[in-house]
Image (cartoon, rainbow, N blue to C red; front, side):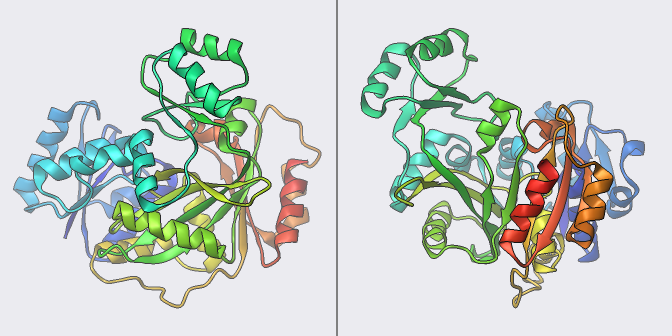
Length: 386
């Protein structure tokens, strides 16, 4: 099997994917704009060959690279980056080179939030009221239906970037004066907690690994307030979340991929309302959280599925709650880094600086802590962020 790995060096922890592919006798071909000498040793050792381009946004240059790989190694079987930023580029490659996976025909409903909502409705799940709106007059008509606050987010966008919470008419007017020049989806603000339905599917679309995350605060609110956040894996997925999540999963037809679906658990009613889907794993160190919560290697699990060897952990279970706790350098904390490591001791299973591309949402430094008890996890997270 031949696998082209776009941008195998970023995010930093994704090198495990290339390493595990090689362990399953896959020929791994790297393609990026990074200098080869800058790649970490593990990536270099996992790659059969590396092709450097000057600009990853130059599609013609990327096509020449794929042509080179095809001429030297034969037909490419798989191509991925695990990075939402490159979803459309990957889909174009798969279409042009007849590679298994998500094609250009699929891309709009996983990148454009307004089209996602149509799929949610088809799946029979609740969505926030709202639509793509291009002018103030139409926005004021929406306010008559929903009231304030509104959330304005790019119809095509990653995470909480360029997202706004609009509290009143003055802020709405200012938004239309200052907004970036692309389509925006305006929706009612849903009060509640975010719960996710995450996992990995096999080649037939069957979910072989499932997970759910709970956040201390919304990522949008965290970014807008420049605050810190913690979030943790659950040991058991709520039954209604799993039922709704599987319906959405089936409607999107996710095959041989990670997925990350976000829902609001509405305040007061407890009802689930769909936020959005991501056809990739949750960000940051969340894959490592999967590993620590279940004592498995999810990178190996994915590589095994891609290589045709099946899911290697059929009897896995969530033995622990695993929590990511972020800190921001601009804040003064009651407990030093040394205090945290000493006080939490063996509960800290990993810690590292966070790449600047993710620090607005996740902080500048992150700790992974685990425990079999949720109350202990929450207490430890509060200690780190105190």
